[in-house]
Amino acid sequence: MPAHDRHPDTAAVHAGRLVVPSNVASSPPLFQASSYEFSDLDDVEAIYGGARSGKIYGRYGGPNGEQFEAAIAELEGAEAAVGAAAGMSAIDAALATNLGPGDAIVATREAYGGTYALLEHDYRARGIAVRYVDQHDHAAVAAALAAAPAARVLYVEALTNPLVRVADLATLARSPTRREHVSSSMRRSRHPRSCGRSRSGQISCCIASGSISAATATSARA
Image (tube, rainbow, N blue to C red; front, side, top):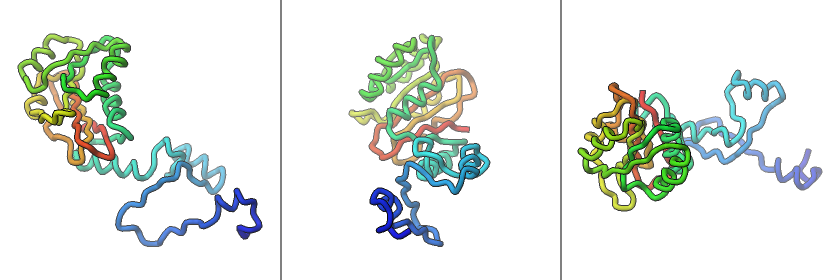
């Protein structure tokens, strides 16, 4: 039906339909749509049920986010990666999956202000003990972990914000940790590879970097 025969609202939705080129773009196109089309109800059921590849709605993820996560996992040698829209979302995801009521976290005294507020106002309210330590004093870090039997996370920052002090990640990763390490990053470049898997216990090492980036991610190493 010609656009001039449609209601203005309908014409505005359907006018100027995108024609997808037969050849692939040299750089990934940005998908800004929140919703996707379905050919019929069978198509809806197949995609919602996972029988057919397709997208449902923006909040459930899109092609660009999946590409970003796949790239991070590949670059880091990780089993998988999860992207977040903000650094605090990435940090909270890394902490919340490793901490529960009765647990404790040993965190750097130079934690970013948003992280400090999260620990003080949210995690303490959840029954999680928080202990701060100078991450550059490795003996103090080891002592803090030893003094907190319930500690399940050691949280440090690769580059502190705002002082930009550089952490010795290789040494911190050799702290007496007792579980798989998890790292979260706000860096443009790779995650510190010194945060590999610990095979000797139960504490997760969560490392955040404070340099500016348009995207953040948490990645769990295989």
